[in-house]
Image (cartoon, rainbow over all chains, first blue to last red; front, side, top):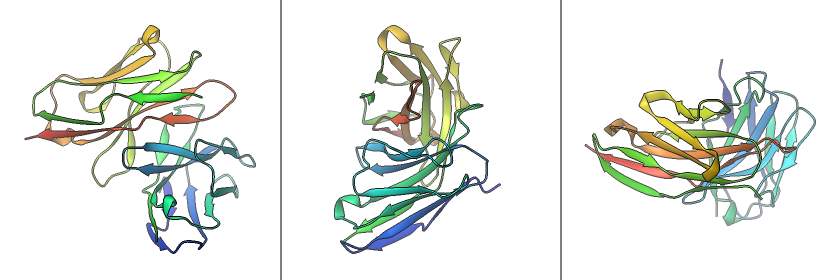
Length: 113
Length: 114
């Protein structure tokens, strides 16, 4: 099992450019999450999806959109990147019912110039 | 809104010292509580969790945490730290309400001196 995979690992964007961060899990989990990690700010929840077909806003959703494409995949889109979105982005999945454990991907380090 | 507070942002200890990292949350209902750890260059991984029952829970690598409901706290402890415990530690809370969110604290960066 690969667990949770994320692409790309690194990305540099110019202000105003758009991009999509991809996340996939092979553990048949219903719940998936997107976090950003910034120094001194910890992990902040951007969006989450409790099940296929549903998405909800987290603490810091502004400037982002998400798509739960199917049970495996949950993508995060930046429509018009801003320097404030420079961060490390983590995707996670959770079986919710049995262990309620977050399984994290390796992260995407995004720099917006 | 629910929140999680970690009192220590950066802790430096010598090997064999005892460790206690504080965590408080703001939510009056039922919660699931977690500590996650991020070793340098690695994924975040679960250290331990509490759902119900014995409020003293044990996790991997000799860590334990105590849930004190009256204080809304879930402090992490280890009697004797090792250099390999150098990492960032995150407390997290799932509130058992309509939301399916897990909220993390800001993290504590632990540095163990050899």
